[in-house]
Image (cartoon, rainbow, N blue to C red; front, side, top):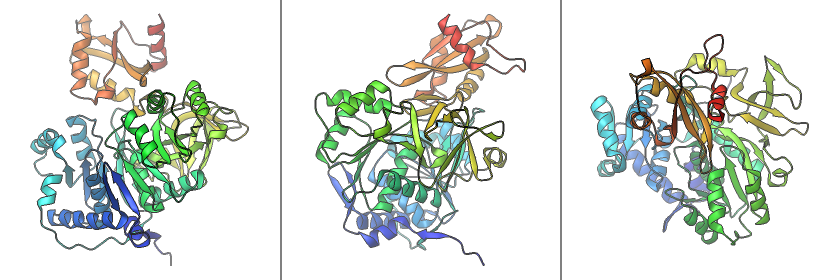
Length: 494
C-alpha cells in the first residue's frame, strides 16, 4: 500500500532544531526561529478565531514586514492555501484574482485600506480582516498542521496569461522544498549565510528566500523595499552573504557603490529577470563581486537554471545549467532538437508546478508527461548551457517584472474609441524595457495619448501602463488575421 509522502512543518521543525538561531533581522529587531514559531502560532490562533480553517483559501495583500512572514507561517500551521497578491496591482486586478482563486478570507493592512473597502463593496460575502484588527482578536485553539504532504497546494501566485487574463500558478509544499534543496546543491550552504531580502515577498523570488530560511536555518535580512544605498550599507554592516536582484537593481547598487568593495565573505549576487549586460558583468568582475545568473519563473518555484560566476564571461548571455534535481531540454514540433538548435524550452523537476488553478485545459497543454512547456524560446549549446532567446514569445520584462502585451491590449481595446491595439517592449536605460502601444482608432476619432495613458492607469499596475502610444492607420497581421507584434518595431524604425 502506498504511503502519502510528507515532510515536517518547516518552521515547527526548524524551531525544534535551532530555536535560538536568528531567523529574521528587520530594522533593529531580531527574532529567533523559536520566536517566529511562537508568534506564528499566536497569529494562527487569531486567524482561527476569525474562522480560518484547514483547506480554506486566504489572500494576502501586504508589504514586506515581519508580520507578513508571521502570517505566512500561521497559515501553513493551519493548513490553509495562501494566495499572494501583488501590491502594485490596481483594485480591479486584485478583485479579479480574489474571485478567480475563490478566496474565502482576505488579509490586508492599513496601507491598502482603500482597496479593501472597494473590494468589500463589490464582494460583501468576502471575509476581510486587517492586521490591526487581527491583533485585537481573541485566540482560539486549533489543530497544528505538523506535517506537509508534498503534493498538497501550499501557495498560489498569479502570472499574466497570453490571452490577457492572469493564471493562478499552483505551488505545492514539495515545490518549495525541492526549490530550496536545488538551490542549496547549486550555491552551497554555509554556516554563516545571511540572505538579504529586498524583493517583494509576494513574488516567488521573495517567498523562496523565506522558504530557504526555515529549511536551511538561515538568517534573512529583511528590507521594506529596494533602496541601493541601504542595500549596500546592509551588505557592509549586517554580514550579508547572498542577495537576490534583477539586473536593473544590480546596476544601481554598483553605481552607488562607487569605488568601494563588498566584504570578502559576500559570496553570491543572485540575478534573475533576464541576462546581466556584459559591461555590468565586467564591472562586477573587476570588483570581485560573484554574479550568479539564473533562469526561472513562478511555475518553477524560483530558479531552475543557474550560471556560475566562473562561466559568466565565457558564456555571455547564457542562463547556465539546470539545478541538480531538474532537467531542461529544447523541443521543436514535438521533437527534441540537437545542440545549438532553437526551439521551446521544456523543463522537468520536483520544483515545477503541477498546473494552473481551476485551469485544467491550460494545464493539460502546458504539462505533458511531467514536462512543463514554458513557451520560452532558446537553445542549449554543445557544453549544456541554456540560452534564452525569447521570454514567452512576446513577454516584456521591465525591471524584473513580467508584462504580457495581451493584457495591456485587452485594456486598450475596452476603450470605446479604439479599434485595434498592439503592444511591444521597447528599450529603456533604467528598466530594460517598457511597454509601447500602437493604436488604430475607430473612424479616425481623435483621442490623445495622455487620455489613453490615464485610461490605462486606472486599470493596470503602473509598470504595465504604456510609456508611449503611437497612432497608426493599420496594424500588421498575417493571413489568419493574427497580430504580428514583431512587425511593430518597423513602425518605430521608420
